[in-house]
Amino acid sequence: MAQLPEQLHLLPEPLLAWYGGAKRVLPWRDAPTAYHVWVSEIMLQQTRVSAVLPYYRRFLAALPDVEALAAEEEGALMKLWEGLGYYNRARNLQKAARLIVTEHGGRFPDTYEALLALPGIGEYTAGAIASIAFGRRVPAVDGNVLRVLARVTGDEGDILDGRVKARFREWLQTVLPVDRPGDFNQALMELGATVCLPNGAPRCGDCPLGALCRASADEGWRRLPVKRAKKERRVEERTVFVLLSPAGLALRRRGPSGLLAGLWELPNVEGTLDEDRAARQLDAWDLDAVEWIKQLTGKHIFTHVEWQMRGYVLRVRCGGSADLCWTDADRLGERAVPAAFGKFLKEGLELLEEKGTVEGS
Ligand code: SF4
Image (cartoon, rainbow, N blue to C red; front, side, top):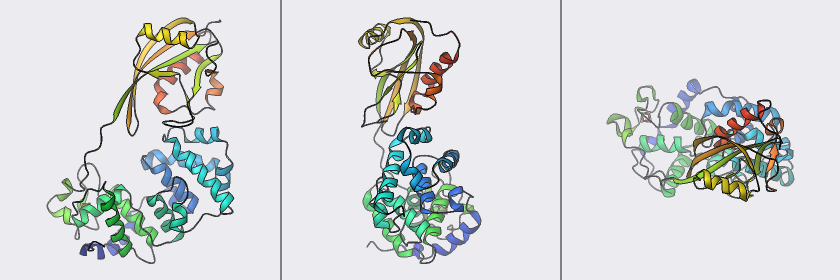
């Protein structure tokens, strides 16, 4: 093991003392069962605490335990997840819930290794559940923790490099307190989220680790943590069709794999089509346009891809290819349509709800 920086020996005491008074009141902290910790941690991946809170409450109200999650119908689960994005997280939650029910008798596995074997649970989440819900002495290393440790120790390794992360994990494993591993892990995360901030100046004057920290004295936090440049996002152009007929708005089911797998979407094709090409696309779907209403543009950013979209809003006669599903306003509420289509869907819904807007075929 790489030599343990001396300041890490001194870290637990001031950190835990600070956490007792500074921790935010959060619903999953009231009753930190494995299910609560798990659902919150999965929701918090890629999403801020303030944004997660209403989704967490709604999810727990509908699916209060692992059995309820395992039994939920997929469409209803996607609807509960709608707005959080990254729908595979919800699918993996359910896969894992079903395994817990069928292979563990409905009881959460209580070791780091058994948790890690469940779908969608990586090192960080397994460490968080094992330490917070079961008091196991294992670290939970997320981006907040990496940032705090890099700054406190002055470590200039690239925190996106797996070897650097493994080094930090080993160090934490050595200093984790026997009696409060869950609080220790949460305290480090909380410090990163509220004091040792990622963007802009950290609040070193309020930090319990100020006396130990290598990065506080000379504004070393400006260069720490070191991160290699991220790969640029791929840009994809798409043309989205908001198609209204007397039978409703056209939706289509996405394929079973890849981005937004299995979700409902507005019909769309690759590329930015001008009106002539868009009309030919309607022919290909066996649709007759009644009225071209408007064009609009939109953009949506996923982790690795950016969609730049042109949208056509138009009335058509009923029919069209078999994969188009004409949906009225009531049924739209039951279908999870990803936020990427939000701007276009809103246009469609407004027109759908205007009486007499949609002409007969
Ligand atoms: S002293 Fe400043 S840089 Fe160091 S851990 Fe605390 S907030 Fe971060």
